[in-house]
Image (cartoon, rainbow, N blue to C red; front, top):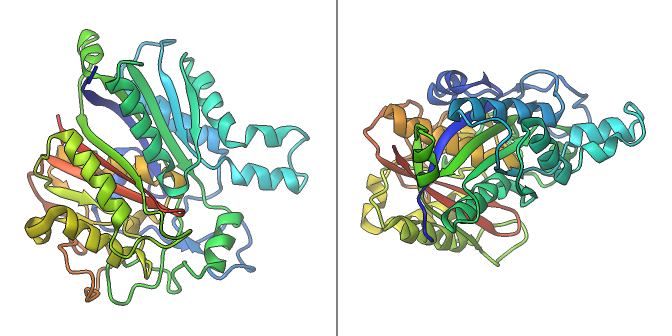
Length: 377
């Protein structure tokens, strides 16, 4: 079988708040959400800045909020059959509370990655496979890819794909010790004066359905996932291949699966780090060839921060909104091009554009790369 995959519902939360309007105001408005972290003492860390939204709720609650919104939008029947696929490294905040003795014995079991998928399925009351993907910054994109494969092959009709990350001490320490965090409180992807990434709170969920099953129940499609791909650089534990080889391989898979369509916009990985941005630019030039300079590219991490395991699914929702509303989100805080980054990065302001098809790409430590082609319904 080779069934079409439709997106019929979504829920999203970033540091700007919950729902699509918060994304419109913040991400599409080009307003970075970075501010001093107040949920824990940042004195021991290299930076105390991130895109956060007050005290951290339990991750399971944030995931459930987004998934319930997605299910409502899709009007899925209660108690049905659906895969629950979650991109997560677990609830680091909960683990920290446990090890400090603030939570009772046994609570650590509720924070591990696999339990996040199980807890979400139980909360939603759905039956079907429950899988947690822990592939770092492509985790939730991998959840979406796996759902597409299951649906297209006829193994399932419906999947609820989610991902979440909330800023906490452990990853702030890890990225800080690797000198990957911005030193001036801003994230400027593809710019000559970029100095690194900043972390951010984020979560999202999408409902994906086989087109024939969605039609039978009268669902309203919001978009179609027509292509998907995943590949590895097999190059370095943390750095991307200088020519973006894994990105190119993943994108070519996705484009072949989609029938080699004309892409009107790319939501880039765009971390504002020394090695990622030129490698990603070279990869996009290889993918699009002579058209590369005519394809708008932006990094929404310039406003949301890097959402780690949640990045793939949150950026999928942002890309969906761009297609449906005819507005491309900007790369905020843009100053001047890096000489090695010479594409159209939609600098500083949103741009009106009648885009029909877009591609969203993500990358992760270990050389993992994903690409998803999304078409406006």
